[in-house]
Image (cartoon, rainbow, N blue to C red):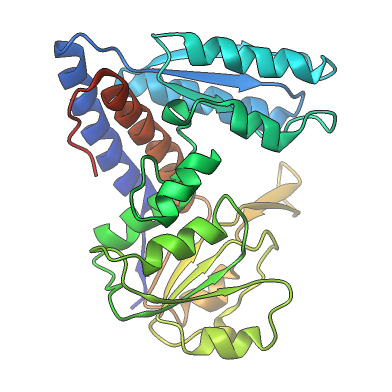
Length: 297
């Protein structure tokens, strides 16, 4: 019988651990703080930021929020990030993506101080991740690692396939899976839009992580029986529902669940973990900046 990987439950455990560390930091005179910056009129982005603020409140992290008009000059965003970098009460800085077209995304990511880059996207933090000395692991791939660990999915010696090569998920996910660690040591293949014979690659995979950004891209016919399937995607598609749409992943859940040994649902799988790991990174950042040990790994 296929095991459903409950991201909500594992995320709750992560939040509990984070909350305990927030209390320990408070006893040491440190109050962890996360600043979010929104330069968009996109309702989805506004919702994501609101959720992150609520998450902070739940675990005792101070939340600061800055909104910038989407038509404002790019320099206003850059200067806002500079100001947040200088604030002692802000330990993590997150600029909600996407930013407007007239703003250079790479400049934004490089502007955030590496020690406050709780997304883990600054080049310095990317380099440390690749070198096996991560300061912050990107939230979604790290969340996937936590799910695999929580459900005792054996990664050592396993054949893993990551479908997608984004800087946010695909590349760091593959890097984490190949590293020497209790949740690594896998033989990992990265597939993408130019990959030939994707079905052949997936057919031998013990672990499949799909982050292609294409609704229901992978189905059960492509999977090895008993494989662990992690669906990172979340897509809004038209449907005959009250809202006029439904949320689906990058995996065709019904057909995949008939074949997989374990699978994440959408929603309720990877999504909650991404948010939980942001809190995790913020508390780590506070500990690093104040030289206070934090018991999170």
